[in-house]
Length: 174
Image (cartoon, rainbow, N blue to C red; front, side, top):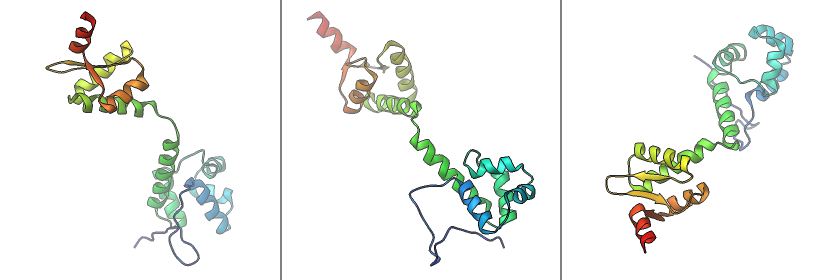
C-alpha cells in the first residue's frame, strides 16, 4: 500500500494557505528536516546539485520523472508534488497578463450579442481587428460596433449597443 502524505499542523489538521509555494521550497524544507545534504540527495536522485538548487529556488519545475523519484526517495506521493507544481503554475499564470484571454472574451461577446456561430464570430473578429473595429455577418444583416476602439468595442458588445450596416447607411443618406 502506497503512503499518501499531506502538509499538516501540530494537531494533524491539513494546512491550506492562500499563498502557494513552489514545491522546491517544500522539498528543501523536507530534506533539511531529514538532515540530508543537498549533494547526497542530488546523487540519490541522479541529478546535478545545481539542478536541485534550481528546483529549491523555484527556477525549475517538478515534473513527472522528478515527482516519481521524490516519491521513492521520501515516501511522499508523486501526486502531491505534481499537484503542488500545477497549483503553483496556475497561480503564477493568473498573475501574468494574457492578451489571448481578452481576444477570447471579445470573440465570445461578438458571438453572444450577434447570436451567431463561433466560426462567424471568429471571422468577424479577424476582419474587424484588421480594420480597427469588428463585424459579424449573418444571414440577415451585418452587425458592427459603433466605434473602432477595441476597449469600447468590448464594452459595446457586452452591453448590446450595436448598429446594423443598414441603419448606418440610412443615417448617411439623411
